[in-house]
Image (cartoon, rainbow, N blue to C red):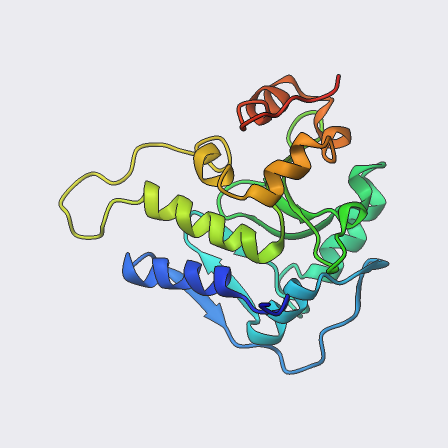
Length: 217
């Protein structure tokens, strides 16, 4: 069985970006031990493995993964200390680890839904309107793999002379790729994420497009 701290999805994302010549920046780790907790919640083992290998990741126009600690940039611990104070339950218990590179949408782990391996599923969070979240991956590394597959399907190859890919947005343009995460779909079907979806009709409607899913009102 593959170790839970293996990161094939993260490697897939890097490979897709490099193959497509998509600009990215990957800094080396800081060298200090990764902390065991994030704002009072246990650090996800895959996120800890990522931070032991990389300081931070930036994928132009797509993703920014917060560094665990940084003197100048927003980092994992400061962002989540602020997040947990500012947002009421259940959203204050989420732990943000990345964001959209262009907008304020966030990607967060759900400690309340940790599985028997210690892995936490990932949700996309809209902080612009009435706060809500959409499930996008069964684990942190699966999120990177799903995002890599989304880029593979969305990006025009570099140097093809075209005008680039049509407008699209994750997760709304990635339902087919997200649905390949069978573990996530099983958990959505079981209603595990309903408490994060109920407040927003668009989120419920989108999730219900996944195979065999309905959201409890």
